[in-house]
Length: 528
View 1 (tube, one colour):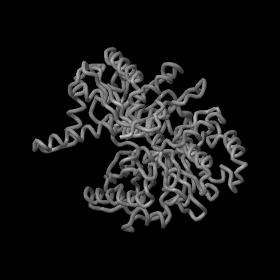
View 2 (cartoon, rainbow, N blue to C red):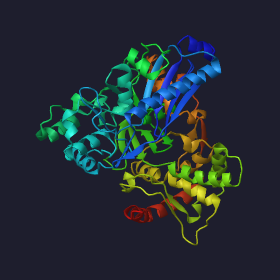
View 3 (tube, rainbow, N blue to C red):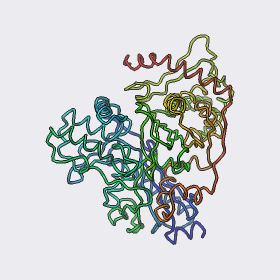
């Protein structure tokens, strides 16, 4: 079939992902190739000391993104979307969305970016003997309990952003197991919430006398391939305000951006992994066995089909690079030179390759928000140099690229150097890798590991959740085999290996980075 025939026959598959700065829709054909796209740009808001997105903006963003997709279909194929073979919804993981019995949100959505849950996360980590990160839903819930928040007694539903959108679209209060594993730990054997930890939590909060227990308010966890309901008539109207889209379309389990990143990079088998690098960054390595002990820097989550994954999550990645590129854009405009943002990024990223392997001593902390791995509850973007450092454009840009993955290296050094975790293939995706060969080379140096990037690196999570929706229709084989044989056909992308000079340079940079962390700490403490 041609793309137009696929769409008109209702055999296209739709994936929508709510990223931190963009909601993206990808329509794929029966061969899993993107045939149309839509997007909506958005930003979180810092309200009353917490990072949030409003409910109204969530729905406006979804509807505008879908409308943009429809416009792309009409522009390319002169037809409309009436039906689809399947749909999948994905979003940034973790955070806190609590609703009452009337499905009314009780407090503004608290995103993964918030770091106000330190006391709760520490107490739960000790109780469970398991690392519970600040951004996990259970940390947010327990922090609200510790603070005696009035709304807690009224909670009927607790979910993530992906779970919320799916719930409203289908009426099904469920969650993909990968996203569920970022709410409270999941047992990789039972592929649902860890029963022992659930019991301990219920016992911990029993003196509060709430009418609910933890499993009463959590969504049911589903593994990839399971049917998670279908688009209701109300859901169809909420998604497509034009009224063209029909109800009844099957919808796959909603997943988090970590899970869709694993799928989009063919990294759900043991000894494979991926690095997603955009507004935030995280690495995911599918483990052969559990780690020897808990680590504060390592989160244990699961693949969309329930295998154990070591995750290093960093709150910050490319935002500070974007800010610096914005300065160069302003300078270009000042000179009266036409601005092509893609060209600016490409030229500046390639310039970084000319820099010294240790950035000439220059150093950046890209902390727009706090970084738990390095012990910073708040952030302050910072550029550090001494009078004798080699301050030039190439080193400045290389320092920006190093700084964007500095925390990621610190976390992964635990896995690769201390735990001796074996990785056969590590694949990068996201904006950090869009300039061919540059981000790859920097990350290869940081982790001293070959890094692959596929042509689909820029497609990201919207494509990943579309693939999961497609897998639901073809789940007679394992997800790993489906991706390997059906979707990717053995393609592992283009690999870049680290050079000894780059590895040595990054090691020198990261030692200096760790030594100078007190400068960042002091910058946070001194309020401007």
